[in-house]
Image (cartoon, rainbow, N blue to C red):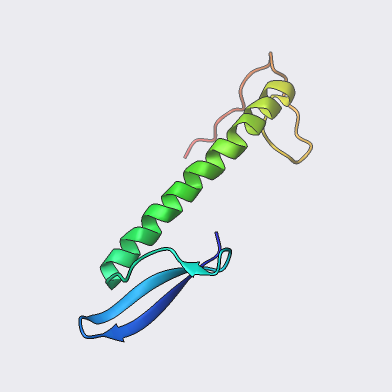
Length: 88
């Protein structure tokens, strides 16, 4: 999402609102710095969850077909052994 944080000095102190450049409007009320930090964190989590939902089925489909979800011409034997793990 294209969101911009706007700031203003108010009688209550510095306040922030989130502006959407997609719809050209604010979609939050005035918030304190702590509130806008929490809001942006929650929005980032929500966006990450949505991205996961969109990508997961494609990744699983590639893994079922190629033995891996890799997009770089990597193919694994579905009936072969797992990779050897390096000792740390």
